[in-house]
Image 1 (cartoon, helix red, strand yellow):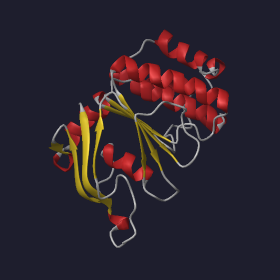
Image 2 (tube, one colour; image 1 turned 135 degrees about the vertical axis):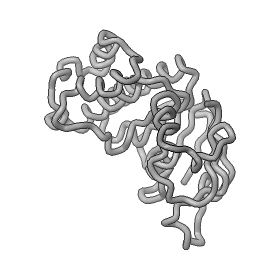
Image 3 (cartoon, rainbow, N blue to C red; image 1 turned 90 degrees about the vertical axis):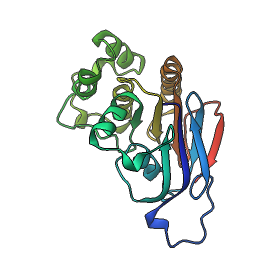
Image 4 (cartoon, rainbow, N blue to C red; image 1 turned 45 degrees about the vertical axis):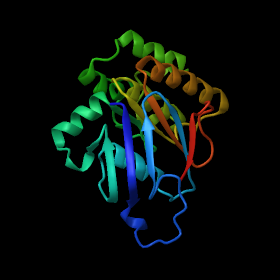
Length: 214
């Protein structure tokens, strides 16, 4: 997939508002493969909604969202499964990890389906993130910042043309934020993929091609 286009998109919850001042809502905007985007917003402006729309989790919006010219509102379950395995990966703000499973088991859930990385490559990412000793730790016994790093490793265990990073470093210190930046930029570059980063404040320190406000 090479581009995502939004035409006149607006979350239904904002339908009665007349004060929309956004670079994305009610605009024509194109996200192109290979570029880095920062989407800045105040809380409640719809950044997580945007990620949910692009991932096909929600359809409560007006307007059109097109993947390579195809209206995503026409996609069925099978098409979305393929897109989520091959085209779009997400680091969710709420992470969506399984607390009763270990860190490695959470990653393997995706990697067993996509067969993207070897176990040694996954372990190397844990080590690079400074959580190599947490492979067998239950997620619900790890800090939120550690969980964010596990969730990113999981997000990288698939092919993708676009990766959505929703407040990726909200609970990381500057050192670990820089480590995350280096890893995700490297992984995106290896795939020729676009990065769409959302933030209400702190964000990945990247040279963005385009900065947008919600």
